[in-house]
Image 1 (cartoon, rainbow, N blue to C red):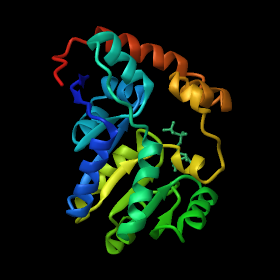
Image 2 (image 1 turned 60 degrees about the horizontal axis):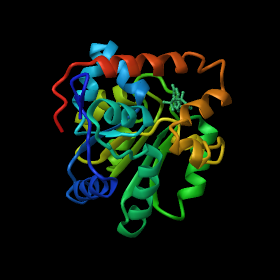
Image 3 (image 1 turned 90 degrees about the vertical axis):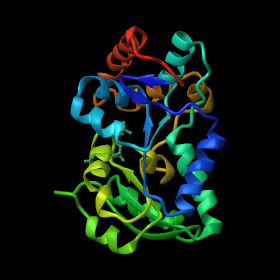
Image 4 (image 1 turned 90 degrees about the horizontal axis):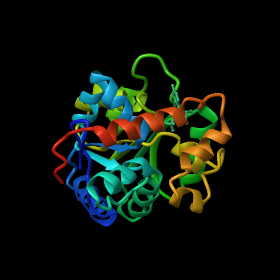
Length: 236
Ligand code: UDP
């Protein structure tokens, strides 16, 4: 699907995963965006961010909003692949392949916890919190040569960081994973499955921190309007 000039993948999640795994094995550098309504809305309104998203190798539909637009507008079932599920799948596969992982982002105590949880399961070569000045631990990551770099600094920060720095690395999957570390470390709860399936994950997160996320319901509404009235080519 093409939306706001961004090409969004329309493939079963197994196929997406297979493609990514093959690229990691071949040491092909990859920039992957997991797109939801808020990311797409920002891309529609901010040209700089749109160029960043368009420069990604893959834009995977993470959120229910994109699925809904596909259904109403194109009458197609665009399979969702939530970023946090892809993170879990890659960890599972990476276990047996001795891939090197680097965790970048979230608060220090959260990313420390991530390391503690995963260090015996997978090869975590390094980690760093996401509150740094400049571009942070780029040199360290360069020298460690990880196969996968999860960047958990929220949108748009994580995508801008990847876009600014990806050329400095020889290989690796660079993937923005939003608040995934908060959930995987056990610091925050993910929405229950029925809410995820009904497309209400945003509402669950909204209830968790309404003062921080008061704009979200308006942004989702704006995304739906803009997307439904968007006149693109809508090719697959
Ligand atoms: N975060 C970060 N650096 C920042 C801002 C945010 O590492 O400068 C982290 C934050 O601690 C959280 C994650 O980014 O773990 C996602 O933040 P948020 O929930 O605001 O973003 P979203 O998941 O909605 O993209």
